[in-house]
Every structure is written in C-alpha cells, then in structure tokens.
Image (tube, rainbow, N blue to C red; front, side):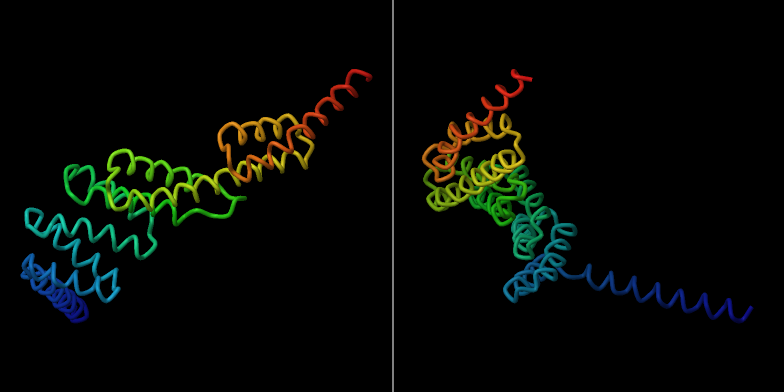
Length: 223
C-alpha cells in the first residue's frame, strides 16, 4: 500500500511540475515570444525559432506579430531544408493573406523549395517542373518584382534539367532498342525545348532512330 502511495505522490509531483512549466510558458506575452523567435532565428537555431513562433501563433493568433510568426515558421523550415513543410507553410500564408506585400517573396520561396530539390537528370524531373511553374507564375503576376529577374535564370536551369531528363530517357529507350518510344521522346524534345543543347542532340538522333525503325519493319515484312 505504501508503494502505491509513493508512486501516486511522484506522479502528482511530476504532473504539477509539467503544469507549472506550461503555465510559466503561457505567461510569456506575444512580444516576448516574437523576440525569442527572432533571436533564435538570427542565431540559426531554427528549431527553437519554430517553437517560439508556433507558440506565438497558437497563443496569440490576433497579435500584430502573428502574421510575422507564420512567415518565419516557413522560413525556418526552408533553412532546415524541410522543403515539404516549408512549401505547406508558404502556401498557407498566401492562402490566408493573398494581398500581403510579402506574396511575391512567398511565391519565390515556394519556387526555391522545389528548385533546391532538383536532382540529376536520371531522377524524377518533377521538382524542376514545379519550380519552373512557380517561377513563371511569379513573373506573370509580379513582373516588376525584385525576384522576377533572377527567376528567369532559374527557369533556364529548370529547362536544362527537364530537357536533360527527357534526353536521358530517350537515350535509354534507344539503347534498349525500343526505337519507337525513343523517336517520340526525341521528337518531343525538339518540339518543346528548341534552342537547347538537348534539342540539337535529339535532332541528330532522329534520322538514326528512324532508320532503325524502318529496318525492323523491313525484317518483319520478310518474315
């Protein structure tokens, strides 16, 4: 019986400490949490920044610092290279504050989240495609934004990656003698990525692949 009493007492003490700690944290006002978040962010303690800004956003949703907290949470995820979380936070910010002056920055950051996930040409080109779409939206909606000029350079890099991936797949089909599939890929590159190095390579490949297709057809007819 004594053991149960001691165990219960320990539980109550621990619970009391937890409640005291939570109450102590709750006593922080919005300005204090904003200062904590800013200090952590400046020191590159991004996880602590997320904690402080999240507490600020949750406890004081109508504070003048709440919108800043939403933005800095997204930025902290970005710096931690937690790109899916950053994209979700940026997209939610734009959805909740579509007229905010930070929206051009938000769109650029979404694009950069995808851009930073671009891999080698033998990998999925989805990040490059999504990055390019976001950069193009930025230029279309905010052509005079300070971010739009740099977006053009990033778009060129996206195109290079996407065209490179298409060429990689086309070459794979060619090497494995899937000539019709290869021809379609080469033609697609020429039609959609004119002016690129990949387009020139594809253009040179088309006659050779077409010749292979005719040879195969001729062999089939003789059989």
